[in-house]
Length: 157
Image 1 (cartoon, helix red, strand yellow):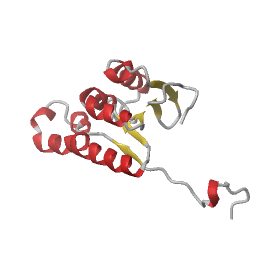
Image 2: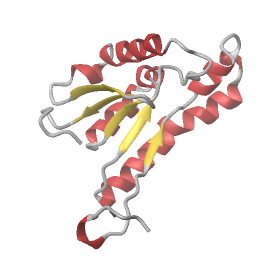
Image 3: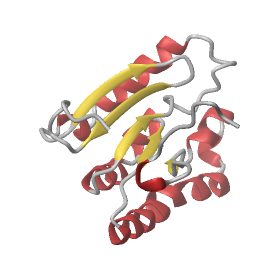
Image 4: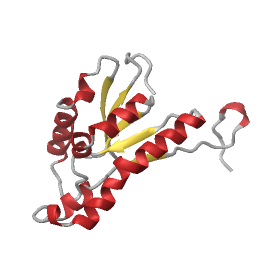
């Protein structure tokens, strides 16, 4: 038994997080950079996420009054700005998931990928929203860039 158990609100016994990674077709582009554009089957499967799944998820969460975090590679932020905008319009948070879903073991220069993902977000319409806050944190496990529709960075999630 835990000697110092966590006291959760309202008598809850645990907490859980549901989040989504919208990798889209970034995986095929990182795996097969020379011929990814010719691989229509995996590209069409990857595009299902931002074009079909995200709107369905957002509608479900709107109906249930739930807000959550979505993790997106910077490449997906550039490639699917409508999905990004819809996520933010729903009051959800977007977190950094690399630039092109690079493998941290195979891509040891993490600062390069972090900066590239940050540049991708700064170059989109998302970053220019006045009611959007850009917060950056680097942890040992995951680099995290989050936006929120709060309009102020005094109320972090």
